[in-house]
Length: 287
Image (cartoon, rainbow, N blue to C red; front, side, top):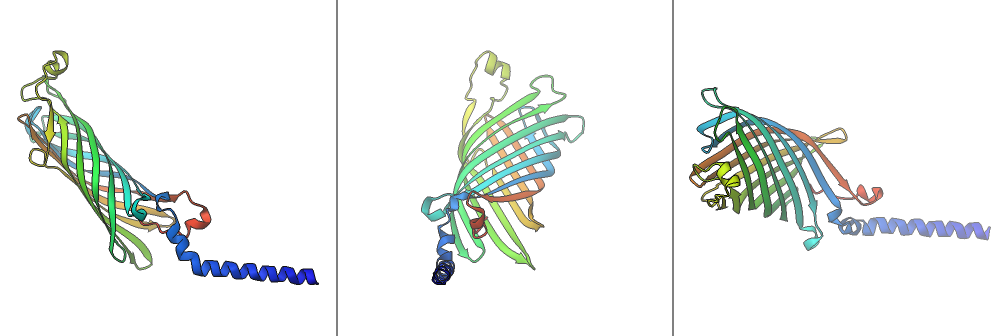
């Protein structure tokens, strides 16, 4: 009997301690969860149109449909109590365009990548503002099917970009939604370009370098990428729909280029963390 009573007392004390721990220290546990372990990853597919001009190949603007793939990863870091977050963004596209008279066709492709850090504010419930910088780079090409001389053009660039985001969480009925707007603009960088009238044979076979790597800034390469998305829960999944506006322009070495892309996006979002499943329910998925 004494042994049974002692066991009952121990169980009662243990239950009391657990109750006090859950009620008194649960917020502290939630706040102490390492924010750098929470990650948001998204894959998006997009369909839209592009308007391209490259005076190295043609003085005409080529327009047509374009397919996009967007991959994004966002993760808070441990710096400044989790106020610094990191983002990796890859945007790839391929397009088949035609001239205004429809007698010229062109294939083009581009892949851009950016890796940046943002500082986070919470000025209002559900609202998160983020500002930071990105290291960005891109590779691309354009091939005109009917050009006999200089049928193709290559593109390569790197840049340091400014980046701004606004993330707003709200509820539509009983469904939690997340709306987001992001704007990125290159500030300083460099790009590869042939000079006006210079062929790739002269450049690579004969070695006739003519200032083919040029410094870029908003004065000679005003560009911007604008991305707006909405996360919608669908069962246990999260569907993301969005709009992409990608404006790339340059006027370097007496050659003008632009690529104005607009696309509608759809894909999915996955939140995951490396902490224990029991603590995962307590973690605040901030993105």
